[in-house]
Amino acid sequence: MSNEIPLRKLVIIGSGPAGCTAAIYAARAAMQPLVFAGGPSELDAQRVPGGQLTTTTEVENFPGFPEGIQGPELMQRMQQQAERLGAQWLLENVQRIDFSKRPFLVEGENTRVLAKSLIVATGATAKWLGAKGEDTYKNKGVSACATCDGFFFKGKEVAVVGGGDTAMEEAAFLTNFCTLVTLVHRREEFRASKAMQQRIRKNPKIKLALGVVVEEILGDGKEVKGLLLKNPKTGEKTTLPVSGVFMAIGHTPVTELVEGVLEKQENGYLKLKPGSTHTNLEGVFACGDVADARYRQAITAAATGCMAALDAERYLMELD
Image 1 (cartoon, rainbow, N blue to C red):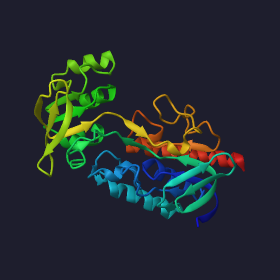
Image 2 (cartoon, rainbow, N blue to C red; image 1 turned 90 degrees about the horizontal axis):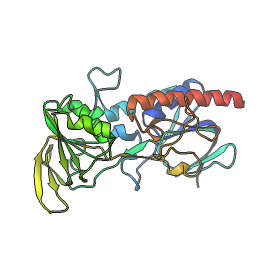
Image 3 (cartoon, rainbow, N blue to C red; image 1 turned 60 degrees about the horizontal axis):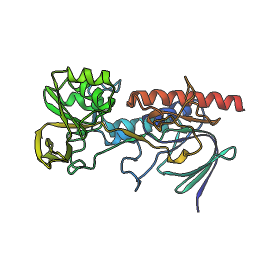
Image 4 (spheres, rainbow, N blue to C red; image 1 turned 30 degrees about the vertical axis):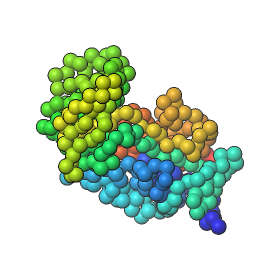
């Protein structure tokens, strides 16, 4: 039997930096937000309470922590702050949302609640290669965010896997720290814009490895030592010595719950009204990586979480 919770002004789905910040602002506005924080998921191991930062080790670029802070600890502090102010946490995944009625019906694994407004902060998950050794060395030299982790590879040689603009932006960024960046792409030509390709080819600290795939990520059990590359056409295998590997093959926004209801951009991320966090459905707001294909940083997610809470507050004031 599901646990029935009385009508809430606001329900927040997701507990990463965006969802937590939305909860903090909403709680301070006496909105008594209920947060579906998520839980273990068979669909995606990355979907855990606290979002992607819980799978990150040291975070050095979040303001207010001059010595850095561990990702899980940062998210725990955000949750504690929101709960102290009056937000309620549920360690459940949302199974279904009935958008056809007002208030909205949100059904979790064990809980049902009616909500006057919703904030969708379900985030995005990085795409991974599925290569041998990838899971072993995640956060031990394998990363999906050069902006987050590039600094840790200062003075070292690394590889970036991908062929689009994002991969090239990551490679260019890493040259600020690394002695050499090898851009690995399975095709002979890049998908990136011509201007970006020219910029990359002129950079003396970037080397290209085209027409090869990553067969295995090599290491000593503690950290990455190299890549085993294979040419699919010839079968030839080569070893590329690197200390880090950055996956830049894209992210997937988590939008299954709102499929067919909320409008999306061409890239699959939720579409918002310009200058706001309003979706196409009145009373439903979105923030964080589920609507941000460009920045995907903890601090920008937190900023949009603040915006979503303020937008929801104004909506509820007008509604009442």
